[in-house]
Amino acid sequence: MTHIYQDILNSISKKKKLLAVLIDPDKMKPEGLSGFMLKVNKSVVTHIFVGGSTVEENVTEKLVSEIKNLTNLSVILFPGDVSQIAKSADALLFLSLISGRNPDYLIGKQVEAVSKLRKTNLEVISTGYVLIENGKETAVQIVTATRPMSRDNIQAIIDTAIASELLGMKLVYLEAGSGALHPINEKIISAVKKDLNIPLIVGGGIRNKEQLDKAYQAGADLVVIGTAFEEDASFFNELV
Image 1 (spheres, rainbow, N blue to C red):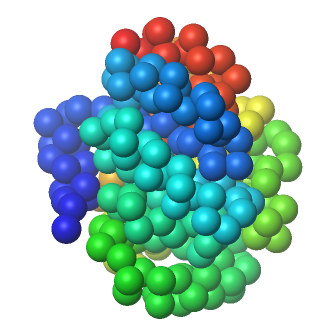
Image 2: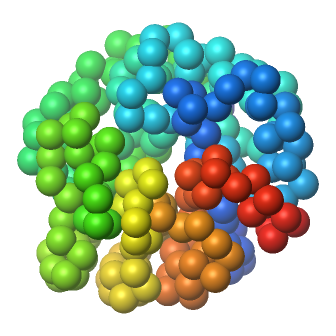
């Protein structure tokens, strides 16, 4: 049994900021994985997230196994669907899309996942997932048939995050979505962090070190970057 959540708490207590690279099984080409992971291992990345909105059956399991052979970093599943549960990973973010009102993604998919999770040794970390508008329609919106929260209604975002904590979730994830035009702004991050007593993850739309630093300064405990690394691997050079 892994202790990834406890490690996250320990890092936060030491004021260490965490960084995850998100690898989408649908976008990562097998021939490019080795070189990509070499850059990851030389950078300040602390965690590997694996997942996507639409991924074919068994693709995630194969990719995770290959990643595990190329790094000592923890590999955490960030699943868009039950089909993305991979036994070879270390942990799984057990996501509930609390910003939406589609019962399938609030509790339906989670119930469906239980029979698969019984057959694994994954550390399951309950996570309140909050989708916030970013200027364009995202794959998450399309797949889940839910609307993102308005970035102008900060109080509603705060209340949604706190509701997640009161429901017993261990993490809150503020998400702008893959390829977002705008990252979550500092005002939102700061406001949520002020009232939250559990770790805060922020992802989507971060494409440079300045935006990354702003997210940390506003209060993000763990930042997730995906598209920026996919489009420009030289970004790793800034993070060595």
